[in-house]
Length: 276
Image (cartoon, rainbow, N blue to C red; front, side, top):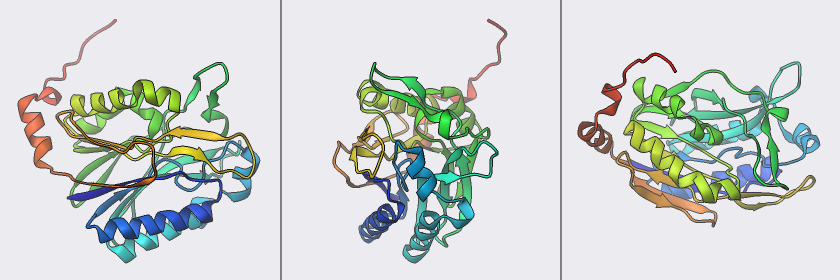
């Protein structure tokens, strides 16, 4: 199946980002892609809570979601919206970091709220507290598609292998890891983590990423690592997109999953144990 990862540099203007992504989707579809994936927070990258409250919307009103659904239907493609920053009705006012699987009719067939929050101090000057503005999800999700079961995750989830093992044991043959990865942790860990998740599960790992310096109207400047990546089930890196925005297309073969799992059937060797 011809598949496309979109590597983008989202601003804090959802309408601007929507126009750019719709155009890239059309180009990817013209090149033959039948499954298209976008990065984490496709609609808005911002370090300003004030700006987010101004431009973000609830799911039922979100223009980014509506526009991307319409474009998927117009092109007749499957679309993984890596995630959208979405307002919730939670009493504390926190947002959701929500991934969507859209079918070729433009319908939402699965949604997943990022479980693991990126609360870290990367360097003395670079600190993230994702849980301050986003509330974590609590449910693992598999999307049923006509090309197989897709386990949906987001960014920092990649550091928690039990989630990926559970998805694979539940039937996932493809794992999605849309991201807006820090340049510091990206350089150190991104490829290694993605390859490990593929090797452990015998799944395709598809990781579309934000990249570069993100335009802003307020708040601190945000930088992301880029290097959208595809890892085959045996652990080979099929795509490393570097740091420029763009469209990256490859052929995804389900037979590669079966072959990797035949050679090392570790999913069938899982044993329960006591302790420590």
